[in-house]
Image (cartoon, rainbow, N blue to C red; front, side, top):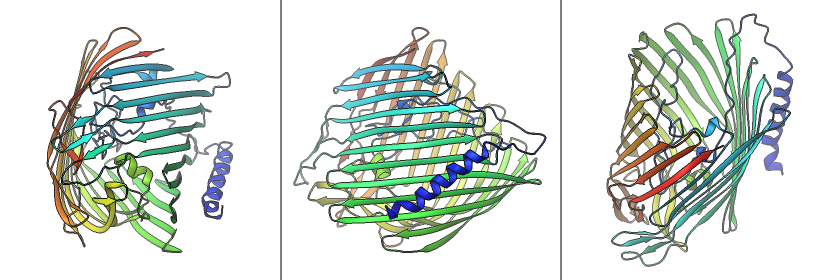
Length: 541
């Protein structure tokens, strides 16, 4: 119980603080009140691992999942420099958030099945309670030397939410089961890899406050288990903004505990952070001067303090058309098996996890919008990450799996984001990333591509919708047991989704994944499924 005491104490202290804050009014006479729509979550909103990059139906496109590592497609459309953020894409396929409930069924080749459902009920005291369930499964596929049999995902969610006028509250709890495929390894492999079934139970609290200096609270607890492994992940974050004169003083309080037990080996990591910053916003000039202070206590290191800079400058050279920005920041990130399994379910829980430290991250570039439809963001950066986890192939008693090796890696990158939007009718995005890695001890940054490309396009004509995604990944290198060089070749994957609004409540669609039917591998010896097509329908009520 002692290892949970610091974070639990901080959690209850912040809750008490926010309850007291609701009783106070801002003393400023003139206020800008932002009215936000209550968010209705769906099971489909969860970041799930898919066998191929599916056509995403969520409205924000912040993360497009892939089977073994999420691909991120940033929304830069309609970028407004004075707001410093992007609006959501304008073309949506489905309208789950506008209805209290929906049900969805889809079937396809390779014994593919998708079942989803959600319902939100409003109580008399303005509380909304709801729940949802999602189940997906896919049959076997084969390459020249590898066979991948069926896998399945099961996700469930319960939620309660309320808008009190001063704050939006949302409480969630759920259960996820990620069942990996059974992989039959032929030559040059000598044994079968056992299937993994990862269980995850979680509970969380989110609150957004209005008209107070206390803005946000985020709390989440995750329990993960796999055979004789169990792990805990507790995270807490609080955001406050204090206006002083023409400045905004922002403070962020964070705390996180991760720990696990793998047989007789255990590890623990606790870290707390304080991130104060001074922000100045003028008509064309935006400046932030901040600091990140961390306290760390883990299995191998006790009572250590770390400091990182957090500085950002943005200048609007030509209003909306051209802005130049420059950032200098560092960070300390906790690694958990929960996050690793969401990216790749074949990661073996064989080592204690070590936080990743970023002593410096310099990046800057140009961004803006041309007219009201074309937006761009060109960025160049230099980063140093200590104890960066790299995944590599390793034989174990369980079979061939992915193990973690830590290395200090310095790299620079170039990133291009382009977006063109015709509101409610058409949208396209192109993202290109180029990296050059310099590991300190390893010959290569294992399983990381030097460049990748993502293109998305979707449009609506009357009741018809079209959406396609195209991904290209450069080759990745690995070493089998860190001895034998192996290579996962480059790949090109294409996906397509066609939809038709058959009625006020009925939406039917056809979805094709890996249309080129390429037997590519995100990691060596882990093929993705070939061409598979789903036909389904969703009904809102």
